[in-house]
Image 1 (spheres, rainbow, N blue to C red):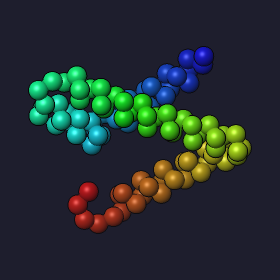
Image 2 (image 1 turned 60 degrees about the horizontal axis):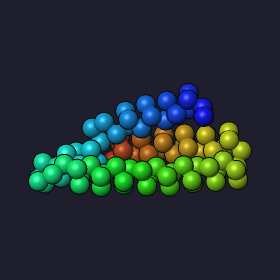
Image 3 (image 1 turned 90 degrees about the horizontal axis):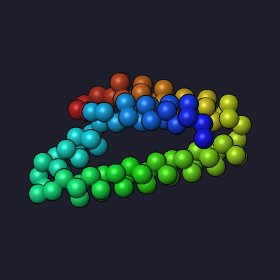
Image 4 (image 1 turned 45 degrees about the vertical axis):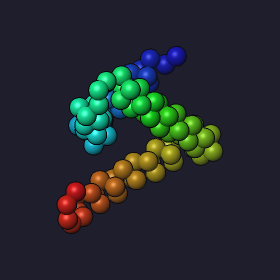
Length: 92
């Protein structure tokens, strides 16, 4: 197991999720429910499933295309999405 990769993935996802609208929604669900455990289980299950899909897709892309191309395309997509979010008009 490559602990540097695992640590980088943990820190990246943890920091990206802090204050995310998904986290706010989860807090809202927990505040309105009688028990936190079902909310926790549902939210954790959803994050596990979405992460599994991302890892599977990333692994398939890594096998089908050179790693440098995947990194460059992913970086370009993030830049375009960030620019679009910054430049769009209207409520966020």
